[in-house]
Amino acid sequence: MSVKFSVNGMPAEFDGPDDVPLLWVVREHLNLTGSKFGCGIGVCGACTMHIDGVAMRTCVMPVMMADGRQVTTIEGLSHNGDHPVQKAWTELDVPQCGYCQSGMIMAAASLLSRHPDPSDADIDREMTNLCRCATHVRIRAAIHRAAKMR
Amino acid sequence: MKSLFCPRCSQRIFFEQLRCPHCSLTLAFDPLALRVLDAAAQASGWTAPAPPNTFRGIAYNCYVGRGGRFKTYVAEVVELARVGERLAIKRVFCAVDPGLVVNPNTLKAQIEGGIGFALTNTLKSRITFSNGGAEQSNFFDYPLLRIDEMPEIVPIVLASDRPPQGFGEVVLAPLAPALAQALLGATGRRLDVMPFPDDAFRANA
Image (cartoon, rainbow over all chains, first blue to last red; front, side, top):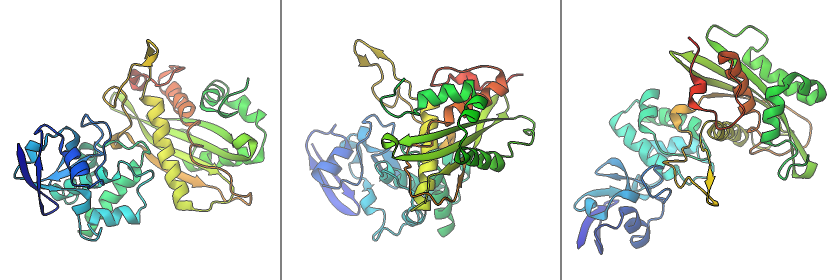
């Protein structure tokens, strides 16, 4: 079955088994490797992309579910890395090892699109991604900073 | 007894600091050790009585790394607060003397992340074995600390004229004994095994 969708504003098509996870298609067929494979069961959030603007965990999302939808990856979040979340992340030096960070940034951008000035409780509820380096202190600070930039 | 990993590794520091904090401090009669302890104590208001419904623990380690080539001093105060029927980890004060600091921003990031990692090991991430293998297989049965469980962290970095020493995981070892001490004060229960059980955080009525 052929699945047609857009990735970062460009048309994309995948012709193959329709239960292949979207993450595989994006990484292996479209060669956009900013989204990471972490746990493969939708728990850690390293694979987070936006589907029609909302953060989704794509390691457990069959590609057929992306049919006709707009997929945004970390590569397409902004043209020059100047999304407020990316700027705040850079200013506060949030990443340590970095593996979870593209997923964290996508989750934070999605949170801010729905809650432009999130409370700590909003962040606690929405930011469920895992970070082994425990960069959480700076993730929280960067989300508040990004909220002030908008 | 010789440790494979580090002469002052987490297992040893846990029992030393929890069971016998005062004698270990006297034995470790080293002005730099006392300096980090003083800094953590002062920042946390240790010498004044704890406010109502607040419980604290303190622990210290001198991390000796790379076969004795570096020594980094660390002292931590964990502050628990009663929130309803639960005890919540509110703040962690962490004083460090790592010699000359080359990049203060990265050093603070290592303190923050190191305490988060230490809390993960202290509270979660149990590994059990059967039939020659780990029983846990992924994050659904091997949980990590999430952002909602991360306390406020107060880093205190002491100026030093020693050459740069080591940093990284040096803040890990004192966290569990400091937390266990605070829980002992709050509930009277002694904890000996990590990860600490969830009911250790149940506040006494």
